[in-house]
Length: 241
Image (cartoon, rainbow, N blue to C red; front, side, top):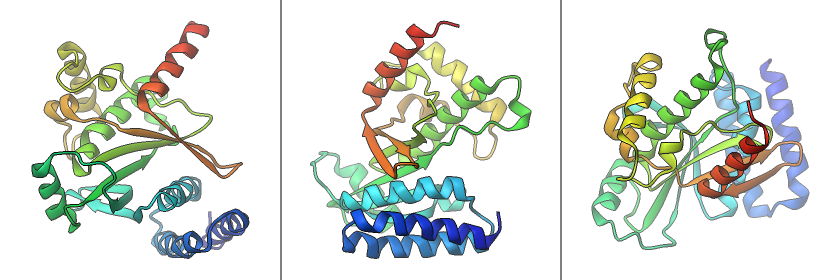
C-alpha cells in the first residue's frame, strides 16, 4: 500500500470516530495518527495492523492511559505495539517491581504500565504445514518476552481470529506443568533465536487481558483471559477435529 493510501485510510477512521468520541480523546488521537504517518513514511507499519493498534490506543486513552506507539523495550531488541501509562488504580503491594519499572520507563512509582501486542493471525509461507503450532509458539513467545516489561500485558486480536494461547500459560505462576513448559521451550527454540525465549520467562510470564477488536464496527471489547479460555474450550467442544 502506498503512503497516500495509508494516510487516506487513517484519516477515514478518524472521521468515522469523531462523532462518538470526546474532543479530548480526539486531540490525543491526532498525535497517535501523526506517529503512524511517520512510521508509514519509514515503511515500518502496515495499515491493517495499524488500524487495529489505533483502535486499541483509543480504548486505552479513554481509560486514562497515555500511549506510545512502537515503543522500544530492552534496549530496542523488542518493540511494543503500544505502551501505556496511567495513575495506579489498585495498589499492587509490589514496591520492588514498581521501582524497577519506574526506572526502566522513567515513570512515577504511583503509575502503572501496560504493554499491548496486536496479533492478526498471520501465518508465513514457511509455516504452511504447521500453522497451528506456529501460532501457538508465537503467542507463547510474545507473552514470555514482553510481559516482564510492564505491570500488565495484553494481547489484541480481530474478532474473527482465535488466539492460540497455550493452556499452561493460562495457569497461575507456580502451578504450570513442567512437561508442557519444556515442550513450549523446545518449540520456541526452533522458531526464535534473537533474543531467545527463556524457560523462566515461560514459567513466570502472565497475560492480564485480551482486546477483541471489531474494525468494521470500530469497537474494542476487553476480555478476561480466563473467560476467553472458557469460551474457546466451549467452542472446541462443539467443533471436534
